[in-house]
Image (tube, rainbow, N blue to C red; front, side):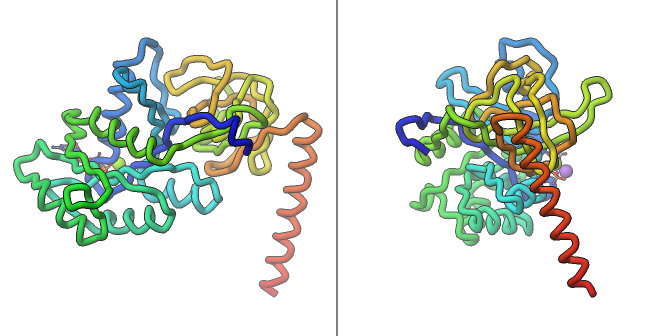
Length: 294
Ligand code: GTP
Ligand code: NA
Ligand code: MG
């Protein structure tokens, strides 16, 4: 990448944590915050990723709307390192549990920085200090103990301190100095994909570099598309989507798979060549595997 062409981009965040600690509730609250703040009155659709903008600072954060390990693992397994920051949700009335530890291990292995959301502080049994100490025993060195990991006490249910959480994420992103090239061929990753009875084959994607436009020719796995239309996470039609934008893409000829890398190519002919190459390779691999069994 040409460093002179790089521009700042929003962070992409995955939410992880133990069962019932409030991942889905947090995503819902963040999503609602966003909808209320948005000037666009469209119907919010579930597209697997969404952006939150703080009106005060204009800080933008993109959340992958599939909480948990599965999404994170699937993305990484396919080499699509789409997560910049993990928000680790820990319920303050429950503390560090098995999947909290598992999440910490995965984030550390992937070298993805963690921000802790200490959740359910509205509950009478919530103990924020004790939760922080438990985290320390798991190698989470919080600022409170002289480390550099931020933690924000929140109530996902009541919407308490969500703005502070987003500010913490924005601060972490600033430290990371996240950049992307908005020019050149687009690259991205498929977040979800499905066939809609009315609109046909569509996918949610995250643009990672370049800018996606109508008419772009895309290849993902063994699927290809000529982009017919694009929508943002509020259902608003888009003419272009820069890096870190979650976008719904219409125009797929086949359905790509979640986690597939998307690349823009120069023409339909090139797309067909790439597909043919990939399918030949798949066939060869199948054959090799079959031989191994014998
Ligand atoms: P899994 O997806 O099953 O792992 O759970 P989760 O982490 O997504 O938790 P979820 O958001 O489903 O919340 C579990 C329960 O905790 C629900 O009954 C929520 O209403 C409740 N809950 C979540 N956040 C809060 C909170 O801030 N305060 C209180 N009092 N309850 C909460
Ligand atoms: Na749950
Ligand atoms: Mg959930």
